[in-house]
Image (cartoon, rainbow, N blue to C red; front, side, top):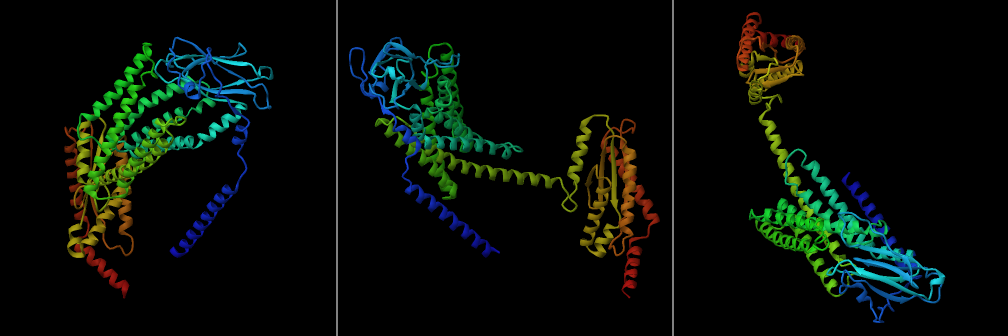
Length: 582
């Protein structure tokens, strides 16, 4: 069977490799220009030719960084639209960041964006993509953009000027950011998956929730990345809300990371965790307090979030390195130690790459490699955390199983004496008036069977007795409290009637066994019953247990008086078997 399965596995592997090879070959051979490129070719750059009112030229870099303008001043930048129209130059497309602006053509206002208002929103407009229709009559005319910066220090600017089909520009931007967008979605999916996985794992036992905190960390990072990609604005017009989401998710990132590190690895110094959580909380409170007091909005206080992110990142690297070294010394190299190392290296290396790209002027997507590193880090650490959590659950399940064994009789599977005594104690402490019925049982002839027929047959006799007792009182609590002694605790209404009915069933089951041909032993069980209620005259429930036990011994004496002795019974049983053989 295994060889046949191997053949099928091999066939499927070959089919899969052929499929991949065909896809790669056809992709390489395809020289048809994608629709995004085709539409983008219908546009033309429009970043050159911009100047101020006094004729000072403005290059693309200056337009992207309008930091020298006071937030109370307004400047205008000018350019001239082309005089000819190829049929495609039907719109002026650009992106604005943290500025208020209006567009004029030949001195006439043609476009002033509207922004949502809320007490939660920043003073800035956020990042907004704009498309202004150009009519044939406006060709060759002067275009003016009046700009007022939202902040004095934060980055403000305007870029991505294109003339032509705005749809082509949008398709090209989406194409350029597609890999980054998919990475963010994958990171968000992994975060949600880890958070959900924490629920069933920790439902029964209180664990450390490291999967949950890693998932929340991934979710916060992915939301921040998605907001910073600036493509959500194509589908959602409220740029101020997107900016607020970006700021708030950045505030939550270091807090979630600290919670994860504490749950997954822990801090040797017990003051580190509360201090770091306090810093994150303080930054959050200070930012929103200044925001609502209209002193500085949350975008202007992002420095606090950046400081917390740096602290959490340094803590991440130092903690993981220490933990990795310690784990390597204690348990040697293992797959999960390797995963943690790979995750740390990926996020560190990609952060360095993006830092170099940022300071070299490549700011169109300043976190492109970092997103991939973050995804690798989350997957690696998620796998390690999942393994640790599963092991913890296994240990918890084993402890729970051992706990159950402590209250179960190993031979019969019903409750043991410990469980019986604890149940009596619970009922004693309940202090209510609900009646309790106690039925005691004692198996006759067990010593004779053990001594003369062997302990295996004696064990079978005990198991059969437990089966008869528990089967007759199946809705009640049954216990084996000694070698040949059983007890049943009854609760609820009509205990006397229920007990009589169960004892009738008990007698029928016993008789049915004893009348079965070729049975190896006789079942003879004495019983006694007592109800503990307000009218019984007893103070404690243990007194009722003793009263039931006394009645059981009375029944035992009666049974021995009318039954044949075990010597007589088993001697007669052997004789009958001998005769049947003959």
